[in-house]
Length: 322
Image (cartoon, rainbow, N blue to C red; front, side, top):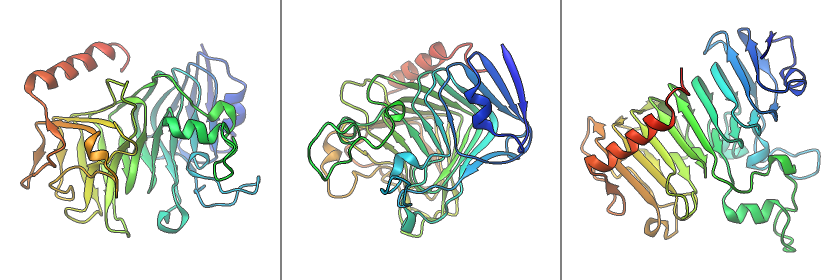
């Protein structure tokens, strides 16, 4: 296995472009103001200090791109993972744009590959902090240029960044994820174990943690196990745990702690839609200092159902997390 050591004076992109996995990259503490894309499989990146080793950039959705169009959500990433079995440890990935109300989405980490693991990682942005691919089916059509409708995009996302299909599995353990609106979104089978979700102050009033868009044929979506949902400036009763980005989005919250900033209804249906009819949102043993009144279209799991998911996680990730 190859091992390299980098400092903030080095270019991460040049280093990872030269690597073929398995390989480990160690980052010395400091600010890496770089936009990075990891395409190789079996790459591990480890920071010297979780809070002081920071990969940061500030692209945003409404920013004009060199191709004459706006960046759009999916080109704003600070760090993009397209390789499989990539692992991040002990560092921070940040999109430093602080004005989503005028600039639009600002992704910190976009994960397109399979078998991704993040442990002891901070993800920081405001809106759409973490994208877990693949894309919803309708966006596959739009971004791949499969239509003659001029109102659709014409394949302006590079093909290797256009994650079209396939079930991707991602694991986040002991991570801290910051944001305001839809700051965990996508279609991956993603597991968040003992993570903290910090909702920041939202000038538009209402915040949302997760925005799942899983297809109906996916039996597993987002699982939040032993997680804490905290306010980092969000007002009381102003944040929902999740809203469905597309029909059939799936979220499960088990043994989690929710602060007073979380609305007692827990979930929202997404504006003027009927996604409350198809969303698959469930919860078990939520700890809150305030009374909860979950929306009727969500469901409370039985202890047997929760145990099955916990056992599945333990079996699936045994030996994969140090």
